[in-house]
Length: 561
Image (cartoon, rainbow, N blue to C red; front, side):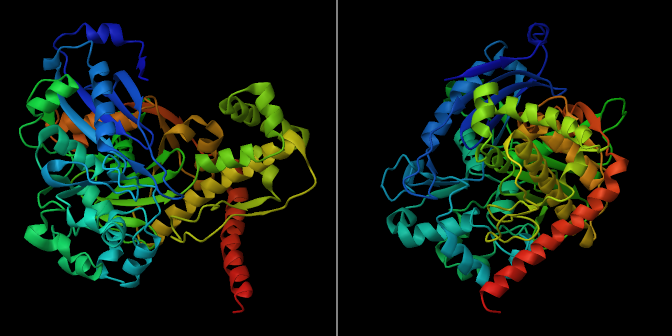
């Protein structure tokens, strides 16, 4: 089913027959989306189409490039229906960092034990390659310093090793392997290029030497991929925002409803596209978008990605990067993250005894969160507290129920809560919810302080997009706890804006990706930190760090150490 959303100004925008537009395509975990975006970053039209995911067994997640491309064609046709094809000057793609496997003549090659050829994508969240990940990390290869010291089981090299060991026929017949964003540019143009964003962030490409590392791949037992000048991995690697080939092929143009030759940009991973869109955002009344180096972009949804770029490389343990030219050429990317964020808050909500009562009374979960946000000031007032934050003075949370991605990089860590009492009902849920929201913000502060420890330049602003950006409590807690102003872009679909900015830069409408970001980033609402809570949060942050040490100590006790 296709859903279309049109902003208030669509009518007037569409009437300008000469106005240039750009199409941004975003393939997320469960859907493909497209947007028609004006040169100033306004989303004029957008559309979404669900895509299939197969889960043949626990921790295995598979998709289909044929299904994904079909969904993309539907949404692109919808968003361009109101303009002339000649007005669309460029198209940019972003997608999840999922592994695509193609056989001879570019046909889908199965990644599934079921043998179904349609299922030729290992989704980013697939955790089948745990053993292979551990073996690769045990090598302690110098290249691992660019991923915080160890690869993640969500990256592509461990998954390729899994294919070699478990689906040997598939591995033997590989013609090309792609990150999903790069597959999309290949499918659109027929040109076999790779985006530096994907290969350096998820494939252990050596950006410093501008080449694949043969020694690393040999140590990973993947020597086959080094043959013929790394042909299967792709030898033509380009920064994001560059023109791919001669633009849309005749076939792809017909399928998408666009003109042949329409400029196609090298791609970005989905979260990185959101960061690109946000880095150019400025607060209302500001005459400039400020120094991009002073911004951290949080793409906050089911999980959270913490993106920041610097002119000089910053090597920080437990934080991925520095990735050279991975988003904007001339800058190094550091990428932190939390494995569960919005999903964690949903878990807290839905496992509490009061959830059923609230669900019956209020309906949608977003209404429940709004109710809890409204209830918290009332509870603070009833207890004689000047600040809502103080409701959790005796309740402390370590939030890693699904392991820690950054800055500890330990998937075996688990959650902790202290200060439980006999309180029941909605009041109990509201305070527990606040404690977990705060804990996520302390986790962000932990990432920031880790970067500072490794000599990163200071941050000036936090930027937010994604589902959690719509929760004012989440954003304000981050501002207060990190003691940094928080900027929420007026345009909520910043991932799509970032994808469109790729097309705007590649087409030459803007002469650099950084200028495209600044021109299309728009404005946002600035929330300032509350100075009255600074000391309180400094003390709670000390407890937060102590919870980590306590968990490690408990583990050592139980292991007899």
